[in-house]
Image (cartoon, rainbow, N blue to C red; front, side, top):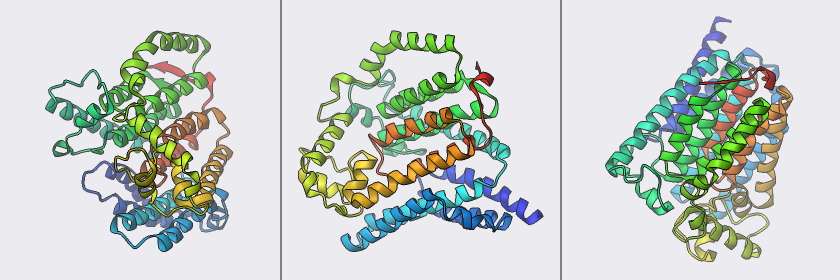
Length: 398
């Protein structure tokens, strides 16, 4: 029993270190994830070996296994073993193993101590993100501190020579801030039955300083859902009125709707890539064009191509690269995992507030193989399965 308790403590600290590791400039996170996978599985299996057979039959896990196995098969028949593609396949396998073993372990845990550890880890992560963004802005003489007029200008802020934390890519860094920022906002909601206004303001400040529209959109969706599901009626009315008041500023300065279709704008690039996907749909094989072959497709068919390895939409990427098997297995993984979470905690409101912002980001950015997505799902699982929170309990404060 003492050995089991120690192994669970080690697993908890290792999970937090894994969370930190994705922000380090030295890419050690695959090794941390791999080590953590072994520790998670060992700790869970020692605790209750009889639960493994039932866990192994979970529909979301079976769908995830199909997705990973098909990606390996696709790589084997369509790739010449190019190092970048091979490395991404290895990361995919490690990421999904890390996810599956962590859920197996987390499903057996009392999570209050882990939530406290995660909260302190998130404090550290976001403070360092703030410092990183301040250093970028200081080097740019704070010329973009009130926002950028285009995606290209926003990207110019990210000086790789000054990079020490997070990611040196504007959109990916912004999306990471959004996903983990939502978790940061949700922690007091679950732990203390409280919506923390200072956390919301701090995360929005980080998102604004990142100069990426992606986190703003996802955070707006997530925070609106949190208030809509958990706040009292007068707060909901006040929020709607406030949003109507600041809508012109959001559309012009934050979302930059006047430049959405420009060729040097991130959204304009996405629209061009999606247009190529649908206009040349017949060029995509039903079994997929191959693992990480999205860039080849875009280079050939998009009106212009800026070198991205994917199409900026998780579901279109899955079909483009892995065909119907890849798309269907990935969608089923997400759906069955949603059902699995909801089966543990029946709070439909909480899970919608968690999953809808994720889907919004996946529609405009991720490839589907990214560690941000699995960490967000893991952290959501930790919070959502710890205890149920109802709107009658929720207070709003700083």
